[in-house]
Image (cartoon, rainbow, N blue to C red; front, side):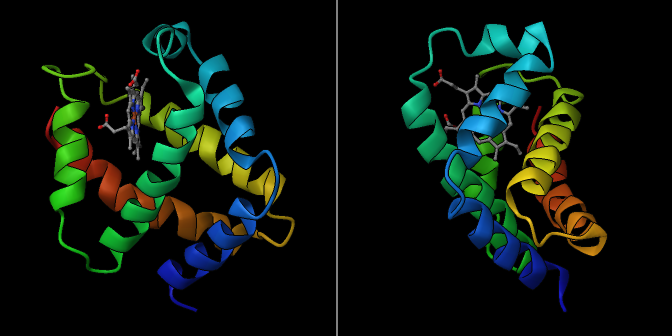
Length: 130
Ligand code: HEM
C-alpha cells in the first residue's frame, strides 16, 4: 500500500479514538520546558482542532497538494513568528508517533515508518522557512 494511503487510514483510526489529541499534547508539552513555555497562553481546545487540520495538510502535501498551506505554517512558526527552532520538530514527530502507536491498535512497524516518511516531507518544508 502507498505510504500516504497507509497514513490516511491510520489517521482515520486515530481521529476516531477518543483522547488522541489530548494524549498528543500531553506528551508533546511534557517533552521539553521550551515547548511548554510556548503554549502557556494558548486555548488548547482550539489548538487541538487546528492540529487536526494541520496533520491532514501534511499528508495531503505528501500526496501532491500545493504547498501554500504549509508555507503559511512555515511563516507562522518562523523566527519572526512563534520562533519554533527546527530541532523542536523532532520532539513533535516523536510525540506524534508514540501517540499513534498508542491510539491506533492496528498500526504496525510499516505504518509507523510510513507516518515518519510522509510527515517528514512537510516538516522539512515548514522548517525551511525558519
Ligand atoms: C500554532 C500546526 C509544530 C508551536 C499552530 C497552528 C497550526 C500548527 C495549524 C495554528 C495556525 C497558525 O497559527 O499558524 C503545526 C504542525 C506542526 C507544528 C502541523 C508540525 C509539523 C510545532 C512545534 C511547536 C509549535 C514543533 C513547538 C513548540 C506552536 C505555537 C502555536 C502553533 C506556539 C501558536 C499557539 C497559540 O496560538 O497560542 N501550529 N505545528 N508547533 N504552533 Fe504549531
